[in-house]
Length: 438
Image (cartoon, helix red, strand yellow):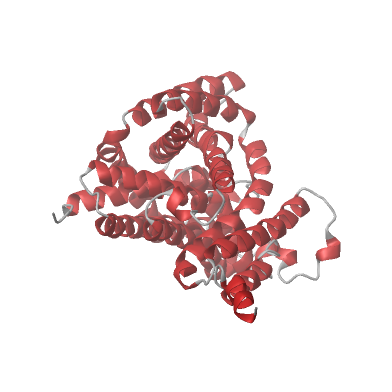
């Protein structure tokens, strides 16, 4: 039987995936990067788009090509290694970093400015309420496409369009000179800044969640699932690119009204207030709340779905556990949470990139089992060097590695390992040759 979706359902799935991606990091990092990039904006924005849009899009397609599940994606790895990797990624995008960050950013950008003076107790109360709402939406897993794709996301997108039109028609300043690392290395600095969105990790897991959503719509055949998953990924990537370009330009023209700001949230808040006056903060609060809430729902749902498959606990029990943990971690504070997450991202992002690359060349590899083990191990080992360097460990003895100084010392060794795997004999070939000699 031919399996098809109506255009409205395809758009709803795509917007749902876009809403899952568009969360805290997607809003707070581009404005500051744009301000720092200044007249090197095109290069910095290009690098950021590669990791924050290009890689997630490719990762979603990789999930579709592999068969729509983590097990298919990592079938050439030992089961234990595959499970450990999945658990680490889910912890990062779930209760440890990304999900609590949605609550923190929602408070800092959407609620705190409206309260004026706020206290730690305000954050505690808000984080509890925020994750109760997120848990409520996550509870009804089968209705996510209707709750998010057809209700929350359109409202979010309208708000984003209002801000974007205002930014391009009425910029609040001129583009100033580049600052810091963006002076000499805007492309690579923007590339690494894109790590902070965590969207490549999220895409590997959202891809599986979207397969479940499509299955609920009656799409069960592999070919149809792949087609609609790729269509949803393209819609989401287009939406993300639109948002990032707008926020980068906003940041690049913000020096006159937000000079010296230490985070993108402050820049965005001041800019919107300058454009729209007192009502601007209300518009921004609605956008940020919706963006952070939809992402929190997607992350809690994806994590709960996976953890329930590993343990005796049900999906609904994991929704409660993850929501409670997120509410607790959210009280750590935004700057502390970001600083803790960066070395973890430096360690695991290259492994995710290598896994995606392997997925697309798997059918051409003579020995996929060996290739997956070697390439992922090489990427992890060299990524750990970049991670420990970030926390202050002296690894200058390895400064001879290409791209070492910009935090990408893993790139060339991983690429070399991948190319070398095309020269590995097929499984069983050495034994056959030995038997022929005897």
